[in-house]
Length: 373
Image 1 (cartoon, helix red, strand yellow):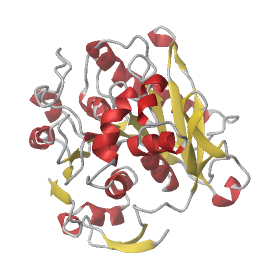
Image 2 (cartoon, helix red, strand yellow; image 1 turned 135 degrees about the vertical axis):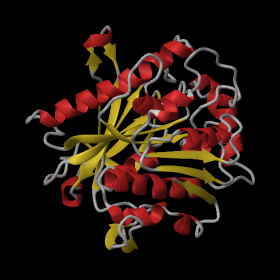
Image 3 (cartoon, rainbow, N blue to C red; image 1 turned 120 degrees about the vertical axis):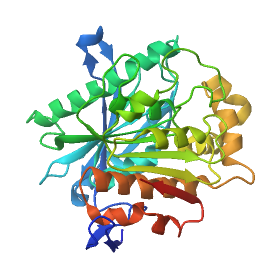
Image 4 (tube, rainbow, N blue to C red; image 1 turned 30 degrees about the horizontal axis):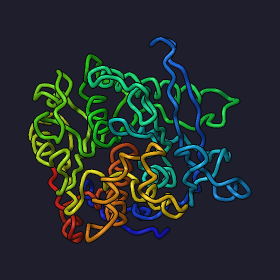
């Protein structure tokens, strides 16, 4: 980690900040648990949590592992299991919401990066709309559960922080929460600030990062119908928190023009960013390459993936991880820069990170197009 002096676009002052595309000063702890929402028919939600750990306190703990199928799991090179959380100050909470029928560990690198920079990150696996859901919920049912799921996770994380016997005791700052999500999870992030599918916006949410989110239902590859397949201008104009809209220029599943509509119609937010990563497709924002490469390294060729329940990985792996495609490691680096900087600036008010959120900085990155208002 290298600290750099950054000139804030907000104040003109110079502040020493950590490089957002490198690991921060903290080690990373990981834990998972399954709280039950008694107010919604005892609805269970598997939740993975990443949190900052003082580096000397991480020594001797096992590496975190993220189960995929049976005994197959990704092993982290960064996070460790159940290490004691860093003390000394409360940490901002960020919720990650996964895509439609996805997994809650779909963006592991970003989760670990945020935790290394001092955030607490919680990622629910949305029951009924996860890869493991059998049978899956209908679209509108799944949509109706998304905002309440995230609000329940916020409640639960706040309660854990208030419990003196908990691993996460006195860790979470309850003054404002960030939400980031990909695809259907990006819609969830918007819904947390605008209301969605019958649920009101959560006033505790203070900043959102929707990635590849559907705004206009006609701008996606499949034909989901129903009242919750997009957002109205009225919903978008009700958003009053900072927002960063992220898209890949080569996304044919959720067209990047969705973000153009959102950028135009989010009119009450104090700051809106529209970030296009040139060359990225829809699944560049998930860890499809890590999973596919692990299976191949284990000697499990692609003909065997359907038997493992990984048939849906075949097409994304081919279009994202093979041949002459934009490198996913570069997409990860760019996402780290912008998401870490956005939440550091707009959740923690670290103005020095504002220098990474300017068109001046974007002009130094050939694969970035950025608009700010």
